[in-house]
Length: 237
Image: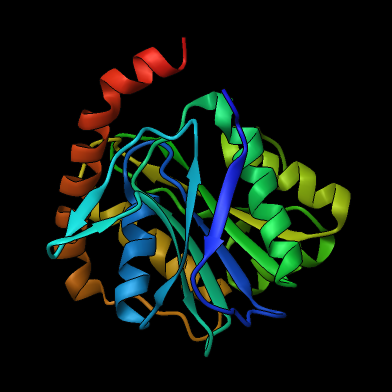
């Protein structure tokens, strides 16, 4: 089966010298919830869709309208693009997804890609930690008041983004956050959203509305996962 990931832009985009946020879920739903909150708070609009023959075939219905489960939202005033997904991708797709994201960032002359990875912990109170692909990315982490990780491992899409970003001199920052792995994890979503907003000028999070967004996003993501579970079992054999 073809593993190519296609990006279909529905409008001309101007994000030069801007930012790209990776909103693909890892452990739990915090990354998707945090990015969804930012989209609603900072007036983003749909800029494109992401699809692949290896993505489970599903339409996510919101406000009566069908939606691709993986979409691109943009705010051209802030120069920010977000890859938002309700799909938890199979490991076999992590490398091609990360490389597609990097290629799209290069096309639009993005200066910084921000991703995140969750670590399970009982209470989720540990401080946020950042990892940078370049010296300039690590400097941005320190300027944002985040601790810089000196030793460790980063799996999945964020790990590939760091490695490839290091090779191509693309600034990538991965935020490590802690979650209990159960949803909706409002606390870790709020902390992640605030950390991302420190790295991206003008981006903001409405903490009061975040809990509602967390609950609704969790419902949608769980529905998508449940509907695609049996499809994944047959697709990735």
